[in-house]
Amino acid sequence: MSRAPRPPRVVAELGRPETPQETADRKAANSRKYRSSKTVNNLIYSLLATLAVVVLMVLIVPRSDTPLDRTVDLNQVATQAQVGVDQKLVNPELPQGWRANAATWSSGGSDKIPSWYIGLLTPSNQFIGVTQAMDANPTWLAAQLKNQAASDTVTIDGVTWDVYRNTAPAKDRGNFDYALATESGTSTYVLIGTASDAEFSDLATLLAPQIQSNGN
Image 1 (cartoon, rainbow, N blue to C red):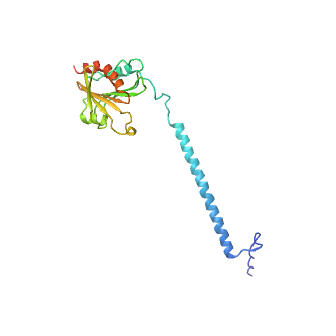
Image 2: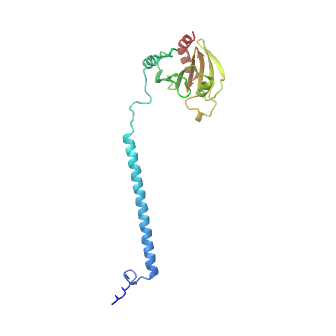
Image 3: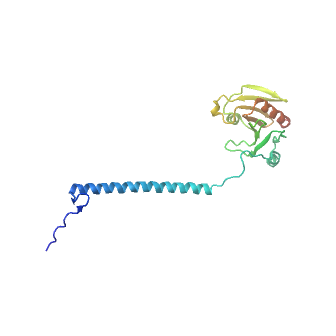
């Protein structure tokens, strides 16, 4: 004997059984609600996972306690760097108000030109970088000066320098507003930074005796 067909479910809100169309509409609405809740949940899980990665990176990335505005022992670093270098590296005795915040020797990168670099902060809290390159070529010099052409020459305490003024828009200059460049012996010297002409002149005066001695 076959079972009698099950009577349609009475929907309380309607007070009667659903029509086939109402059943289909209800199931479609329930499906949309489910997909929507899954999307929101997935978004929340994704955000939580991203946050966890960021927190992990913050925890594992080493951080230096050394301030950027630090002072380095220029004489000590220059003495260490001098070992094995034929040309005497410039190592000025800085007057009151001047200090070095960087001093590094590079054996030469892709250009294969060794160089000695000093970063200086002036009394007006401006910056001048001093680079002494060994056996440099015009290509190296042009790269240091961002292909700016010399606008003048100036002689400071017996040393003649080419003068460079950066003509690029201020926002594109970086730490290069003004520069001086000269050669002595097998070394090329470049002073480049944001300080005043007078502070550049003061530094060139400090360097003059060492630059001249390298030319002898």
